[in-house]
Length: 262
Image (cartoon, rainbow, N blue to C red; front, side):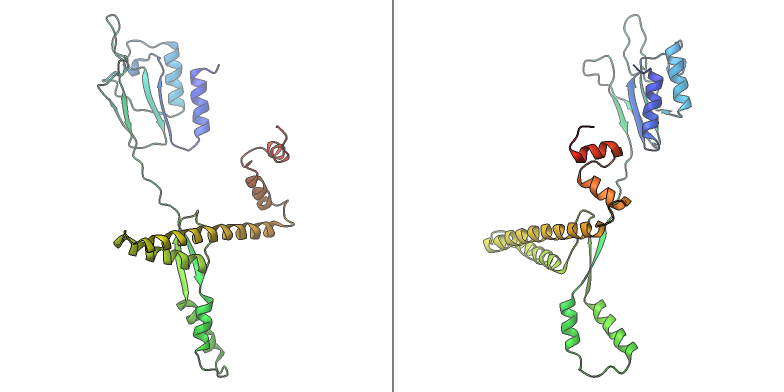
């Protein structure tokens, strides 16, 4: 069984640069923690905490354990952290029948903003219709003609922002979403309208079916892109990922793909 200081060192090594919070009843005595004496176990633990540069958040003027008629109140419950800022530590007055007080720890957290994807959809049918309405005359100035074409493309290009887990969009899926959103807004004002409710259900079914079709199409494109390149890093990631063996060793991954226990 690993010693307490070895266990702390291993946890610290696994955490790496990630935030680390440790709360344990160490039951180790050291004068820095409000005890009257220091034991060998407490000295080793104190040294390990200093070597790992862990921050101790206890307020040792408010012990965490209730003493008895022969022992004083002590603080065996230490709260340690690494790579965390502005932690608030407090001891409550509640014990729930134990001889240890409940500790309240508050850690400020700022959720990361989700990374959004921007899909560019070009409505080619609308561009063709717009171009057909132009006079059918020979091109006199190629620069002017190209500029006019680019202006039409820009005018009929739509940008849609979606979360990362949204499948690749095409114009049909975008139109289905727009129709669903429009009818949904109407239904919110007429919630007893059964016709709108049925149209919403139909659109949702169409959206789901078309999204699944897009996913299959995208997967086919991925497979075609790695054909003949299975020895590359990208090909290996696709194969191992599809088999659910990402993050394993090469030998373990090969065994899993072959259906053989590693």
